[in-house]
Image (tube, rainbow, N blue to C red):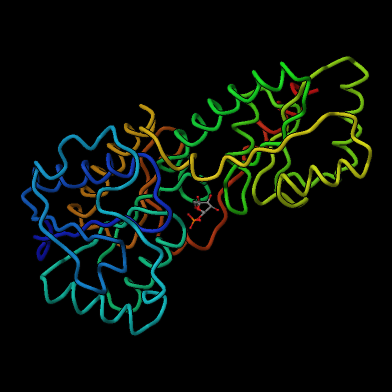
Length: 327
Ligand code: F6P
């Protein structure tokens, strides 16, 4: 064990994602196994500033592997965005004798961890946990697979009613300003089109596609709209298509926060177990200021500075295949 590493803290921050609990469990159990004391920080960086913490034991993380959300709770802290807030957080960590912090969250949370490390020399390790899958340095983030599965299951249900009424459904999925959830959900649910920032086609293309499908007597269809679509929300897209004389009887469904909930899939639980344990092992081997991830099935680390400043790759090959399959 490196000198001066006896006590670590773990927190979840930003939008919660299914599998965060499994990640906390993994961090806590690997740390205790390795002889470290673990403190849980409640409500993310807000709780760090307000000293909302308690020691976690093996039993503290029992029975949480199958639950969505995060038992440590989460927040988007305005105070932590200020230099004074971060200074107070670093003072509290020092006063409590915490030697390193494991941060589970999305890009905003990694940005916070990076600042804490740069400005106050706090040893940090990031674990990517967000449904958006938009973080550089990992093929998958914890929660993405569950969100896609939840969206797919909802769309399977919507398809039943779409078929019965010969309707077109515009379904909006989350993803902030990226289309990772949108593309994967579209492929999994056999949508006829997907609108997302990474593939900014004119809306007239979708109109022509739908008109061609109507001529082919396709009675009902599903279109996926990423919340960050260049054509606006699913409601706005439906309005624009109506103005072009779209012939389909159209309805809109916004899936919203349903995608953030539910029991994590096996893939997300296993990813969380691997990344949580790896994060602690990185600290034990003297690493800090990095985010752990999985690339081509291998556990890797990326300097947290790069993770927050570079853009996650987009699956262009899946996009190409989907364009052909959705004709
Ligand atoms: O980052 C996760 C996410 O669910 C995004 O997909 C979405 O844009 C955002 O968070 C919603 O944030 P909030 O829960 O604060 O409304």
